[in-house]
Structures are given as structure tokens and as C-alpha cells.
Image (cartoon, rainbow, N blue to C red):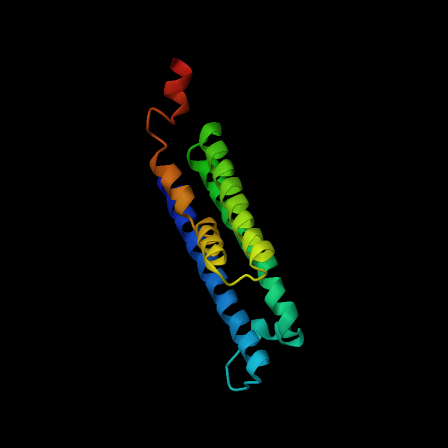
Length: 160
């Protein structure tokens, strides 16, 4: 049963990652069409409803979609860790890892916006990199790998 949980978690992250990539690539294509008045880019049928929105709306909505996908990756990881490890300590580390990533990304993005008055400098790049980690299974997989370490394992720490 445990192997099945690992397989299901990997498949779930794979499907979520594919959908996220599909969504943002096609949203960027729609934005490209609108910005350059370009009409020959193929847009999948499922993404057609986004064509009614303006370029500006789509640009700023990407920030909300980024938060949404970050939450989904967190939720998948949290559920997977709970199902496989059943360790409150590991789930707490997972939660705080996401809090730190999102807060750091927000601080760097706010710095770039407030100090430099734009979102296209190194701070923005760094915040996107941090959110790229949050929108991946990396944290979850590292915590799964550390599950049996005596420092993390609750069975060892409870015995002390």
C-alpha cells in the first residue's frame, strides 16, 4: 500500500506540473497575441475563454494563478506527506518551508516594486525562482527522503 501511495503522489505531481505548464504557456501565447496583435498562434479550445480578457487583466491575473498553483502544490505535498509519513513534525516543516518561500518571494518582489518601481530586476527574478521551488514537488520529496532520519522521525524523538 505504501508503494501505491508513492506512485499516486508522483503521478499527481506529474499531472499537476503538466497542467500548470500547459496553462501558463498558453496564457502567455494569448497575451502575445493581444500585445502584438498576432493572430496565427494556435490556442487550445480549453483556453479560449481567456481570449476575451485584456492584456493587462491577463498580465496581473498571472500573479493570482501563481498563488493558486503554489497552494495546489502545497496541498498535494501536505496530503501526500500526511498519507505516507503520518508525521506532524514533517508536515510542520513542510508548512513552514512554504511560508518562508512565499514570504521571501513577496519581500523581494515588494522591494523591486517599491524601490525600483518595476518588477523586472534581479529581485523579481529571485522571487520567481523561489516560487518555482514552491510550485514543484522538491520540498515534499526531500521531506519524504528524510522521513527515516533519527533527527526528524517522531518515533525516535518520542522515545527520548
